[in-house]
Image: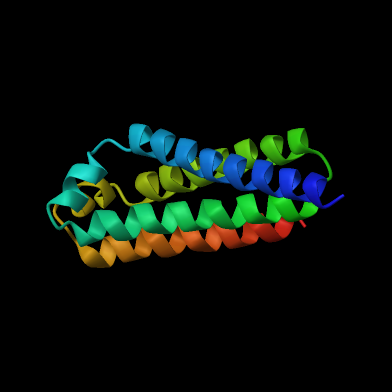
Length: 130
């Protein structure tokens, strides 16, 4: 019994981390600028934006693990949640056409705004999964 629980724990932990990693890779591909390069060069705005998106998505992954009985449903809702986070970015970028340039120019206020929007969307999305 304990080994079975340990196995389930490890599978969900590793899958959760892999899903978050895959989300970050997709998110980095979707955005039109090089966040990791900007962050490496001290871009706090890009760090805030990416961190908010990652944390918001991680909340939905955690909720999916908690509330789904099967591994496939966990993966399904994680994929849906990733789509919601990407759509949130696209919506804000469309609503604020200067967003991408502001993040590239290290506008910390805009990075903070994008990060908070992503956290809010992730929190609501996580609650909707429960």
